[in-house]
Length: 127
Length: 324
View 1: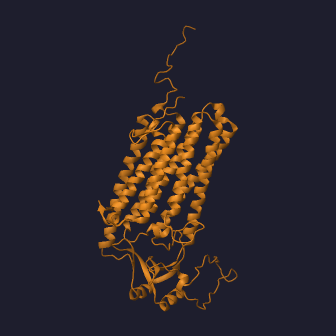
View 2: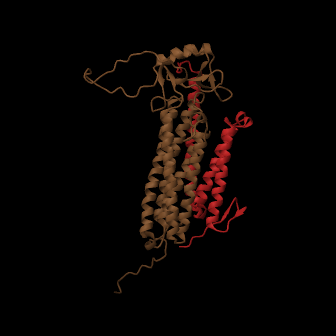
View 3: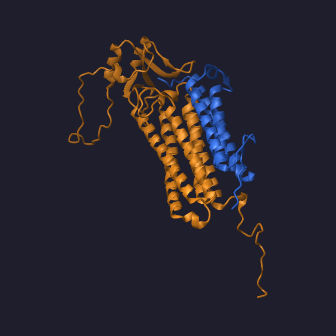
């Protein structure tokens, strides 16, 4: 079996000499991202927690985006989706993404609606 | 002989032996499983989001819940979870290295890297168990009101959380124990909290520098602390003492938080555990030379996919349970 690895990450910005080297490179990158997340989580800079974007704190947006970045590199380099055919990659990635986005959309909207009913309704629930 | 139909299907699309999407059967099925399992986990995480958005003003703050590190006293929010994340990513790395060594048919290296992966998984499962034990045991203790709300305590001078033991009085109370010889229908009394409700209430009344902290989150993103007068009024609504967390009572706040914590991290921990078991089976197969004789190490690649998936899920659990 021929195993060819694509050895570039960051869209070709960083090119590794061997697959092993690429693995360590990705590890370093993931560790840095995790360290940044934990650092931000402990420090909680005021301008990130007091500013909102589409109903959510900027800090939480940063966490979610960094998580997706980590997920991308785990899937692409550890699960070697990068080396698979693009048809497999698309089937594996876009199907769940579509379904999950749909689920997030309906459930969070519903939850927000229930929150408002609890808050503005005439029935007391918190006694 | 001439009647024999020769079907020249070798190498054609319908002749069999084809590999759709360039992946072998086993790998394809692993991807099927991973996609469906990903949907299961996202169902859990999204329902967590649902409950959280529903009770957005009273949801517990994770930084204040998970503050412990084994062998160290004090307040270290998230440090230990970050360590667990790092362990899992690290064991993912050794797994990729094992797959890579498998491609190059280096049995010795595959053995070493698989071994390290198993160790990493075991450390993670152990840490998870410790997290659970700490969470169940509880921290400061709290009171629960009639409506199921949690009242925690704060020292008015330092602004720090106060444990029940800091102010509760020891009263000469007598409990009549139910015994099997008396009861027609006997049930063991189960766990008793270290202080009775009366002891906590009396202790609170006689200690003026203790205030009550409610579940409500204020505009600064912190839990609301009542003043002394409001605290005393709120205290009258308390119905029981809560220490630690289980599926019914949770001293950290909303009981749904504890339910989801047990459910999601438990389900993930079960995945890690089964991953470790599968890794051990493959590990012994490697030592026995099964894949050397088979001529390829694709089995390592397949368990590798599962192992990375577990890591991937943890990245999301980490974000949505501990960070956001």
